[in-house]
Length: 219
Length: 222
Image (cartoon, rainbow over all chains, first blue to last red):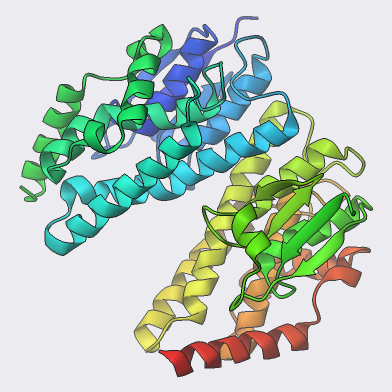
């Protein structure tokens, strides 16, 4: 029986992009359904009743939620190469640590960079750059976070780069100046088909952000 | 030199998760008690990003973040497995582990809340979490995840609930009400009396007294 794979997604979401990259890396055929946050589908509410958020991967009718969780699930079910997580338990724990770091820091701070104002925005910008610098330090001189191969941490972080242009415009930042190695890493990742296919153009994200701010009176 | 070392706080729910995991699997380790007001240079070297406990050091290599440590231990020492074998079941377990992780800061917020309104908001947030668990997690009454042995979700929630009942005593408010949350209440009673768990939970009165003193210390210095 062929696998039935559906992804409930919202195209500007970095979390949705993570799952798309993972699915593309494994060459998995899937149906992508766009959700409207003003009117969430009954399927989304049924498949993720607790958080009511995307992404949700529905595999043969059974839902898996939380993007990093979904990446591990994909890697375990479709357990052929390319592997997304390292096979060594210690290296795996390190990958999970950085995935967790990205989730705890990048997400909560970045919103205030493009939506915040005044002192709050300035503080968030500072924290955001610090966070990117920490990640840049972890990357070091490796081509990818996991070493020679593209993997879990790269998948976890690369979607946020589609938002960099938006952060730069609203936050008056120059991310390439602050974190040149990270930007080089991002360009390297974008050369991969799975990433290029899954990330919207940064200008499209900016258009979304602008509309969002106008609609909510935040411009 | 001991192969496994644990840097932690005896009263912390996060350290507790790692202790219970090591004890359930019968793994010998050296316990290094840290002082939150005077963290060891070793700890700061092992966890430069967060500078927090627990940190597990295995053969000289440090690991941080309690549930990441628990998964690592489970992968390295397969006796008394804590995660299901089936990938879908594993994904469900990880989902609930993350949910338990979200509960602990909510309990911490209750602990440090000032004023009636802030306290009520914190309690409501915790109630929302408990309601979800009560509704969605129980197949059998004994263990959260339906097995007959303690598993990773029990450990994740067990430590969170242990922290909650400590705070309940300090602020003298009952939150995990047996009437409101019959499954959860019954599950926790079974959990805390289970072999190995029972011998390794920190003494309730001691923890209450210590956390109270921490609160007083922080009020004095603010």
